[in-house]
Length: 451
Ligand code: NDP
Image (cartoon, rainbow, N blue to C red):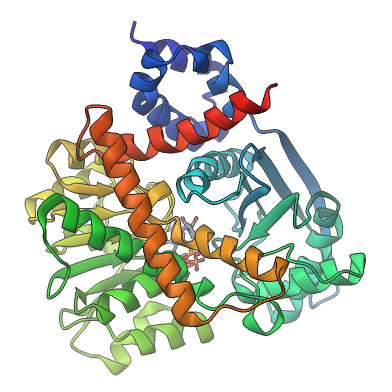
């Protein structure tokens, strides 16, 4: 039995339905780091893996709030403080009906390694609720956020745990959460990131993840093939914070992003997407993508009901580079086959683990440049850390400074991942490179800090 199989066997009991995605993420990491475990016995001696896959604590609480009809609503809230070897727990809050402990454990575990890759002093955590902000009034969202923070504030702090946004949690929700924290604690401190600029947010935080994913891809293509994205057709999934800003940056650098998707369907505009219209539709008015055709009748809308089984229409469009930016496991093995058949040379994970394990393996085996989420979407958390720095020093960085520092950070992550892959005999494999580099950084800190 290989060292990876032996390690995975130890965690078999945790492979229940709720932990499926957590187990998937953990298995990928264990296979990647096997050469590191073989070359350095300290990691086994100090039981690093056993300690790393169990969160420091899982906080679960009841959230009771009143809807607009004065009816009492009850949701479940969570904060998973996973690992603080490198700095305060740091990671987003997700508000979505699918949220459960297993999904948050997967996201929190990935966050530890992602944050380590940034080279910044931040640990890993994640949280959220099964509350669905969709279809709720602003007042209902406000009331929910207040009730959520009434409980959460006991466990967070600028040097302890600093949550941010994720799916369903944008600057509106962060604003309400921050307002409630301030009210309860009578302090004005950098306890959340992703705040609106007017009260402590960093410029460019909304853009950071999407822009960062494009910066990473530019560097990866330069290192792997001296190619650029200019003039190239790109497909993007999602129509939220990450997807829209990836599309915006692609347009700025002269690429041609032609698709985006939401949970109901896909827009395909072969001339290149109209980003201003999309931002107005999705960030301001929160309407269906179908409306895009009212302004651009030459574009095509495909509803989810017309997708083929186990595949997604967006990955069947011919492209040079693909950017899955919606949610986990949205790019299947069949989708990967379609991308390869259509000549796609690069896949960048803007969302967290959007590719299934089978899809990732297939893309790698066909030498598609594959940028894994924990490296490629680290731009968001990097700028969150810049926001923490600005809050701590009561200063404000210019847009240019944030953008420049973000670009340097993404290029450094890319180079570090590429060099690590080379050092461990898997040149060009950014999945293994990212897992080994991230794990090593956290593991060495855990050893140095004792048990
Ligand atoms: P948003 O809530 O802003 O947008 C999510 C988008 O994905 C929406 O368009 C949504 O459609 C679509 N979507 C969500 N679930 C599904 C689904 N099951 N099937 C199809 N489409 C779906 O989230 P973000 O853009 O912030 O996050 C997207 C991904 O990026 C997540 O995986 C998140 O964890 C990750 N990420 C986000 C960061 C950030 O800074 N925001 C940082 C790092 C990672 P609809 O509009 O219909 O709901």
